[in-house]
Image (cartoon, rainbow, N blue to C red):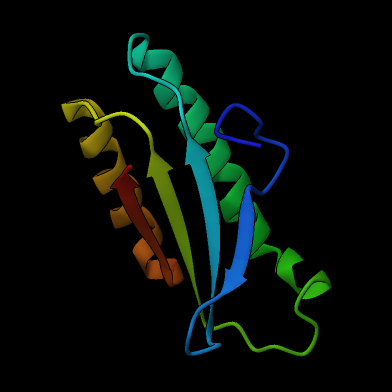
Length: 106
């Protein structure tokens, strides 16, 4: 499972305060084809947004009241300037839905 598989949630967990849900994206792809990489990432994030909006997590966490979501992306390779701009744009759009985008480079 990784960013290349947009039909699967790579990882899911509750936040420490049990009010939120964390969805993990594992991204091992380099940025040699930046456009294609950004398109894969966008598709994966869209799947995660649908998962959160449709409350599909209720199948896993029955009876838990989820107040917010976190999409946590772990990159293997340093991000390009365009990738950082893209993630900031996504964050600006999803913030009003109670969703936060966080990312790290391993």
